Image (tube, rainbow over all chains, first blue to last red; front, side, top):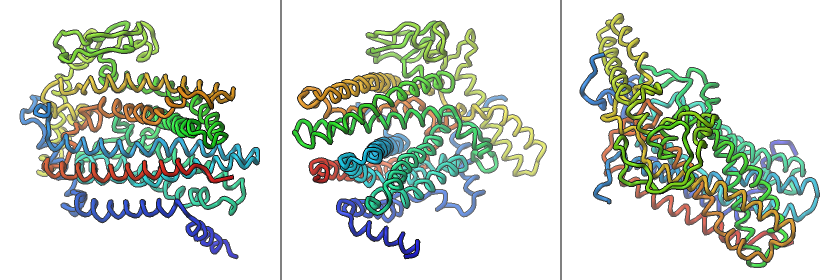
Length: 77
Length: 511
């Protein structure tokens, strides 16, 4: 058998012979589905990626935020 | 009490991050430590050919798999939170964190896709030598993955190897080697991994104690106890040494954190280390009240810890907040002035740039560069804001240290009794052993509480306060996702505990 087929057979045999592993894979898949299809899409958008198209726009927005949040009085320096 | 709490968006975002990070850290230390214990168990099998060691390895490997599967991707939730709750921060550090986190993902993928598969599927399918090699690679690889996360965290505690780009509003990596070899990153990595090894030993001791109490799998339990207690004993030394190094680093790089850990308000020469104490709850910086209602301390020890000299000055909270010219310590008021100058020059630089007035822009940039290390102070309204919550840091540190010194003693007692074959009838010890898992978790979590609460109010030390790092979100939105996480992470933890308990109950494969 060529090495690639042997590697594929190794993984297939491994997955087939799993016992506890099947439960754990279910747990992983359910978790991943919740994370990526519910949490990420519904609750956790990347705000800067969503709201701006370019890095320059993102940078400008963040700097504006940084400057706006500074207390209003300025030093004499 | 609840009326007094500040329930703004930033605190909900903080609580959400803390909740997720703490749940993530339930899984991580066991993965890091148990992976190495598996490698040792399997090495005994490889060396002796005794099938009992193989049975032991396979049993602990099963528990490792449960923990790994439950913990997998919990760290990703933190990344989601960066993009939503902490978008300003996330943008600013993207260039610094990008490289270490990309290396971490590549490492994790490479190891999980290859050596994990061999470790779990490869018994009887690959040679004994290659299987052992794969188990060691999983252990080394998992721990190296942790390195990159701790490098990122170390940078937040002690930002080095970067320069702030005033046009893009982000920190840009100048020297990756400086970032990786930052003393904070190194001491955190050694402390976090060695304490995880110790924790995994406590886990094995605890589960083995349960078997001995139930009079099941006696040989497996005894052998596991011998290996785990030697492993735990060896690494507790490293935990103590790296903890000492971390405290030394704090003294020089984050002196406010060390002062909070010790509730040291007025600096002294020499300074004593508080062994145990009860804080005066009314104490505030600069109010002249005594800091303790009761305390026992070791004279000279804090000076030695902080400076490696028995008679030396250790600054207190008041020195750091209000300044101490005699000791050449600048007060926060002066730093606030410099921080405001940095912010003002940044605004003027951008205006001049917009107006194509390059000469003026250059002039303001020079002023900004002079003051940029104080940038974060420009957001503060009062010097006292630089003080973290002292009781949280002080008590967390004490409990962690007391447990950190108790664990090696416990390992020593277990080792002695197991070697003398007297472990089987020590019911008092075995019952106490059942507490080792919760106590181990307590110490491990409190270590992070000290690290993270102790650096407040900063997201990036001295440069970016947490409230400025946060996105412009309403408290209700963050509150909602906090409770979503509470339910989700609670369910995940419950699932892990149920599967783990079931597997422990089932025990190892029959001979």
